[in-house]
Amino acid sequence: MNYTQDFIQGFPEYDKHHLVTFLHDEETGMEAFVSIHRKNSNVPSFGATRFWHYESDSDALRDALRLSRLMSYKAALAGLPCGGAKGVIIDRSGAVEDHSSILSAYADKISMLRDSFITGTDVGVRQEELALMRERAPNIVGFNDNSTLFTSLGVYHAIKCTLREVFSDDSVAGKTFAIQGLGKIGSAVLEHLAPDAAKIYVADIDINAVTAAVKRFPSIIPVSVDAIHKQNVDVFCPCALGGAINTDNVAELSCAIVAGGANNQLENEEMGDILHKINILYAPDYVVNAGGLIAVFDEYESPTYDEERVRSKVVMIEERIQDIIAESRLQKRPTNRVANDLAESIFNTYA
Image (cartoon, rainbow, N blue to C red; front, top):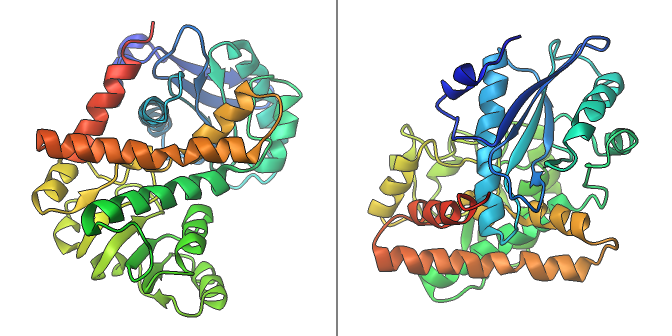
């Protein structure tokens, strides 16, 4: 495949990326993209690796470009001195269970990027496969297996901040919520909220996930995936796929706040403009869900794991959301626009 610079630059997701490279291993058939959006000269860029079946190589490349850029925004407003990156391994069959040979070949290739790229698990790469990759590449993190814990903790503190802004009270008690998605993050957020919330609606495409959640928290109210965003609640928490707020449903929202763990919650930046106009407070997703990145960066820079040290860093997300809200009110601009400007002012200064 001949992925020239001109070809890559033709994609709308391209943003003068530091490096975009196609990796191939003939023996195993491994094919992957590594995209580094911004690179601080003193620190490698961070971004997890996903193993996914794409309809085309162009789709895989666009995913790598888009997600690496998102990671730069996330790192900048998490107070981390690294740029964003992403690894995307192309699953040609969509049905292979044993990824070991492909992951080994991938690790061999990215070991050459050790000074530029630090990676770990994303969709399709199992936690237990990290050790296999680490045998071949030193630039693998995520062995503390605490991403869900700290991502959900960050979401919880972001929610508390938005509650304080809208209701002058950051207590979950007496508040109502709608959680879209009950995967790892959605379920963990539910654990934080369920003990005190007045009412929680939940939805997931996996009925087994809903059943398990109801069994654990009998007072929650299951609704259809098509109705979850329509619930009349204080906080809508998107914790599933991207595009939760889009042109088809933004007018159907009946909440005061949008704050959740999903990436790319806005279909486009104009959705943030609409939320601002209709007086729904939006907590920018890449600030809210940065807890996992904060945790793996701590693992990278600290030889020993200290949960309280990481926790103290993650709870600072609440302060960052507060700063963005304050600046949004001062400028009379949407929170997503303010957050983007703040992040860009940081990572666009990297050498």
